[in-house]
Image (cartoon, rainbow, N blue to C red; front, side, top):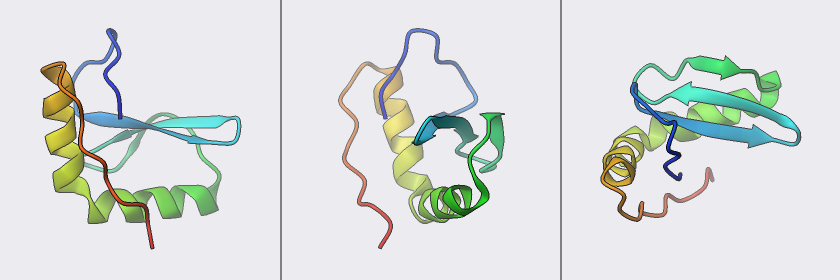
Length: 75
């Protein structure tokens, strides 16, 4: 996760799979923009659900221009 000057609420993260991208709302786990292939989306949402608290903490850190913490991958 990294903070872009144009980033704004609601808390979200950008997911990239190949040349496809999506912006995922951390609180609702809905795609706000873009689209991922179904299989990739399932994995991204499973990972995000398991790490929602960490994602929200990282959102707050990034908003304060601080380094986000690493979040382990889906096992």
